[in-house]
Image: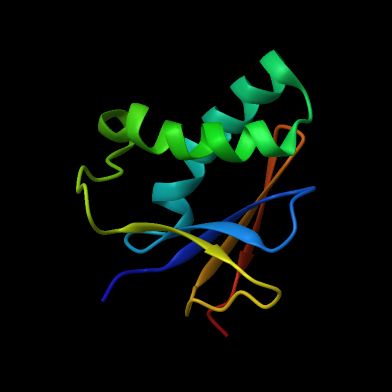
Length: 105
């Protein structure tokens, strides 16, 4: 079983990026920090574009951060008022910074 995580963008409601495998901060945080910093420096706070570019970065940066190369599994977009995917970690991108919440306990 994977270490599931969801990734939110502050300013968007009811939509997250779901990452099925290796959602631990040691693996996920370096990618998100690089992405969020570069995006915010270039575009500022733009939640819709940030979410779209986040998805693209999971492919563009897959080799650098070992994000996986499957074309059919491991990632998803989840929508709804209450998002529950059995996630162990929740990450929120907020104006170039990353907030991490562990749901282990």
